[in-house]
Image (cartoon, one colour):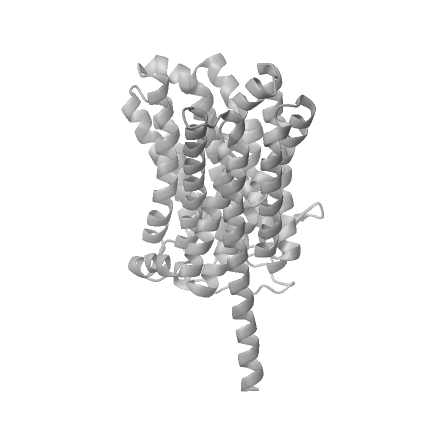
Length: 430
């Protein structure tokens, strides 16, 4: 396989197609390589959340409690959060095309192990392996998505890649759960193996062989990006602002059942509606970010998200309004993903160019830290004995988002001050 490490950077002019590639069609004005990233993201996204629908059969088959089986979710998230930046840094000398193909190979192998796993411990190992592949894939995939399109389409490209993840949430997970409950949980993992193979082959065929590898420093130099205050600020924006969604989302099913009064079948349909909102919001967030700028878009999105979450505290008890709010929660809860990832990559390119891949991985980790913390806080709120209850999760989630909004405003002001300083410096030198 040809290494992509020594290739020159592509020219981002309109006529260039060496790395950006030709648009697939007028309806999809992006390189075909972006489709390969999206297909792989769909496979990985299905694998991430599928375990939630299979806890009971896995626990029964492997002789563990449902609570113990549930650790498969937490351990996967930890592998994503902490493995992504470390492995991304250690593999920085490997060409991005070769690394991405290796990750898909690891993903397929991990799910083969999961499908065969005779013990709970081996299934844990399989989940950790696929979690590591997940984190590094989205870290590297984000930098590739940004590099293979023109500057004005960067956030949309990231959004399209992440659309694979959101579509998996809305369709892949319910379908995989149905397969597992109908034909056994191991069959679901074989289906994910097939998806992973499709992602591997499409990446092999469609990813550019002349893909530029960003020059990275030593592993120690890359980790030193953690000392850069503005990068830490963006990571905090991600963890707090994005994590606020999961204070309420983790307990959306019992909210709709116990407070809104919906039957289980209707709740399932509303979760699909939520997934449709996620898909719309993900692509919309990318479009808005391309048009108005990542940080400006984040200010608006976080503000609207806080309002919608707070409103759900009151609309949850009304069946009609709760349906409307559930869709809006899906839209605003995930629209911030593309601008957050684009913003942190652009920040790293300016402040820590030797650590772009690692910073991208750190932000993927920050998303998962936000999920873990949000879910934990939601559990604390609902467990009782603290004067709070299930209906309080939305407004508490809104407080998290307000925190993320505050940090975003600070980051925006810093950007403007630095831009003003550069302008003044240029004028003075002239």
